[in-house]
Image (cartoon, rainbow, N blue to C red; front, side, top):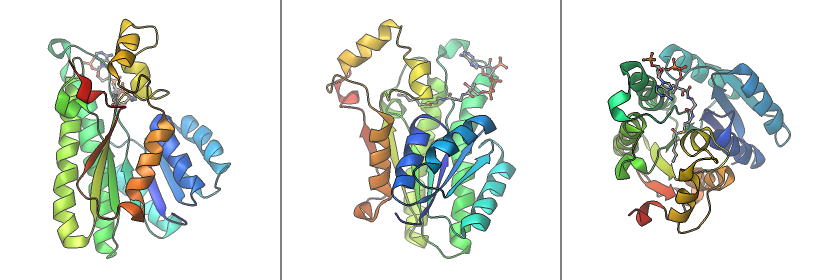
Length: 253
Ligand code: HXC
């Protein structure tokens, strides 16, 4: 992973930050993006302790011009891009019948459109410079199992899964670009976890009981999987989605 360049969207907290730290530890140059400059700066300080080569870029994945400029800046700073991790997400619990159009659009825009803007911008850069690269998308098991209160996110993540497989085939055949996905279950110390399963809620204990591993996942475990999926050891894996949830989705009643 030495001197590989990896972009992690939503890289200032939770799983994004854990992935950035893991790649930095292994010698990669890391670009983290996020909407809040202060949070990016804080994460940068933490990541710099393991590797000084880090760029933080304030942007909203919903803005294609922002995304384009981030890709340009990464190229100008490091000379190339090797990996894109589409981790930025937006989510909140809301009954489907109560969800407003703006609420629907906010989540679809961040998760589905944002992933597309980043993937296309980086992909075009790889194609133009005749370079191979790899995309890793973060989805969720409820993209195929369903989940009450997350219709916007479930539909967006299902779209991202379809995007992963389509790009794996289309760009894989033409340009040697690969695309894979990770579907995390409940991962502690992340924005999604705090929003969907507050520790005070009844759902908290029920969730633990539903997981064969009898515990929640940790961001570092997702980071280790991301590292494997972008390392040469997994070169022959393309268009795949790996679930990391302690066996939870198989155990649904
Ligand atoms: C109902 C809500 C709402 C809620 C927002 N909205 N929160 N509706 N219940 N709890 C509605 C608002 O009322 C508004 O609609 C519309 O959504 C847009 O809200 P804004 O706050 O203006 O949008 P914005 O500032 O762009 O924020 C986007 C967001 C927010 C998605 C709404 O939650 C956010 O920024 N989240 C980023 C962090 C995050 O969610 N991380 C978790 C991702 S984890 P109206 O009609 O009022 O104008 C994940 C995977 C989890 O996704 C997997 C776990 C297993």
